[in-house]
Amino acid sequence: MEMDERICFPYADDLDDQPDFINDIVRIYDKMQDDVSREIFVSRLMLSLTRDYKYMKNVILQTEGGKKLNSLLCHAEKPPYIYGAGIRGKRLVKLFSDFNWGGFIDISTEQESYQNIKIIDPEMFMNLYTKGTVIIVSNMKGSEKIVDNLVSMGVVADDIYVLNDFDQEGARNIYFEQECVEPVINGEKIFIDVGCYDGKDSINYMERTRNENARIYAFEPDIRNYKVCKDNLAQYPNITLFNVGLSDVEQELGVMGEGEMSYLCEDSSLKVKTQLLDNILQNQPVTFIKMDVEGYEMKVLEGAKKMIREYCPLLAVSIYHKKSDIWKIPQLILKIQDKYSFYMRYYGAASGDVVLYAVEKK
Image 1 (cartoon, helix red, strand yellow):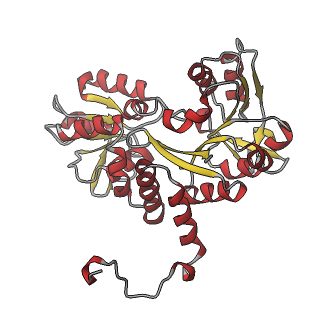
Image 2: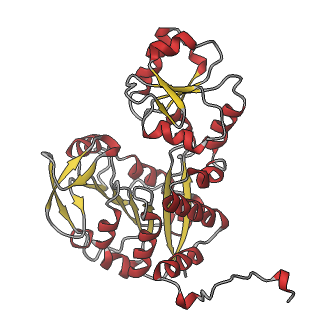
Image 3: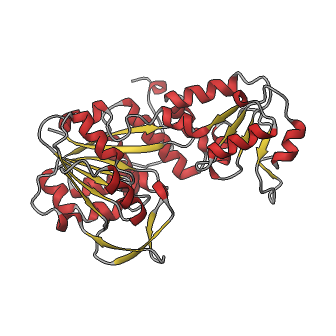
């Protein structure tokens, strides 16, 4: 082999001499089953290690919502504005840093600018606004009211775009990506919906399996969400719904946040009892577990070790709530059951979800 054909490093860093972290990353990477998964894993890992959103740009541009958002920005005749200078609005700037942004619009102007982009209130914006100026509403909640207010102030409705719409464009198959769940989607199965929120994922499972009698166990710790689920799922006697928080220990915890953003915490006036999935569904041959619990995934997995080890169910786990989730969650899954192989998929546009699919390799 010629010298210029080799990959040469000036350090003695044999794999055996490298830290366990590197070995774990290599092992997880080797478990990825396609190029899409490998690209998402590397990009999300680099984001976690560097906090630089540029690593996710190419992943986003492969989603339908990301393509449409990028096209909108590319064809904007005037510098576009972002309504909302919160986390999602600032993330938009980080992801699309190569565009010339006109500014942020926000009712709170305590912060004058972000990354040299001015933050102005709606009234000041109206003094600058001309027809054809693109406005992207980044707020997760209350976007309809924001749009109505902008229109009432004189903004042309066709100039207003809602970030949620771009995110939802690419989220249609979330938790049920065909090539990832195909091994267990047909036949008589047991589905567990952990963090069922409004029950839509349990309904999606029945629709995709074309089996309205499938055995489903759904878990929602937030009593407010639980009541919504109870109404939405009332017509399905095959679904058993629990107002329980799943964890690795039995204890009383608080519930914070609201809607799909509710999460378990140490202290809150709203309380819930936690239980182990292994204890609730003993000896149930579970085949599919979907999990989205706002950063509590590791503890839920720990509380389902026996089930995972024995039945090796397909897992569809949200893997983006914490920076370390991208390696710690697959690391834990392999520690529990090393028969798994992985797929990763990204859903959304500027603020989408990353889901890890763990499938038993036959």
